[in-house]
Length: 186
Image (cartoon, rainbow, N blue to C red):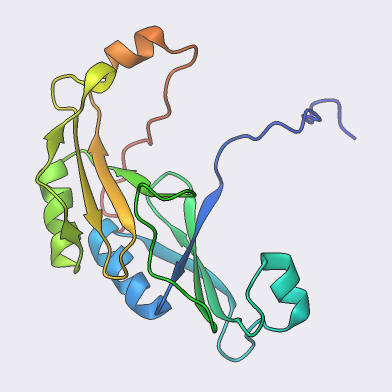
């Protein structure tokens, strides 16, 4: 083992978030149109789905569930989204923010009005208009808005250009994705 390797077991950060959708191609279309997402690769395809007791155990799936497709998707400069299309005997609608578990993911946009317009043009539904960030996150230009994807999952669009208040009380500066390179996935 190299001396420079980190053996602490601490994470570098979030690599990806897994999201189960009813139709992977429709979800990809939405993410591409709303956020300029880029499909990277499909590591499960309809020709070779994952099913059976081994995959049910690995993923804690209800018996009879089939993983039809999986696609890793780049979303700007941050963590990826790993889309899963699964079909099984016991599936439920997306959770509400008050339910336990992953409740939403947030995307940083420099122009929240344009980001919200892209979201709705792609088929998403905004729950409100952009709002001022509350409490320590309040500041000039700091806005957020929640919306639902066509399959019912919650996504937050946010902009926090004024970070002084929360950075002043945090032990480390909060991560902010770098700006997109012009011309990429616009």
